[in-house]
Picture 1 (cartoon, rainbow, N blue to C red):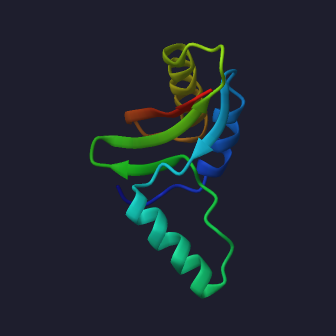
Picture 2: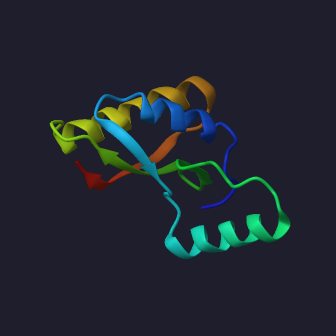
Length: 109
């Protein structure tokens, strides 16, 4: 992925507004998260806030998000709602095709 888009901050809010989502986890691979955290600390810049990764790919936008699902909500249904919320948000703000939306459940309960 490359060229992370600034509206990803607003995507965090859109995902957290989905019923059944109670937490966002860093969507970047662990090593990227560790490196970014270290760079943020060394340069004394504010921590990177984006939990939803949005990047330009050859075929269009690629999105990755990791969520925690509240007890009592079917994880598959919550994932579909998150997918739909992301697609709706991006269609409102972006003119590019959406190539991929990857929703991962990192925790249930």
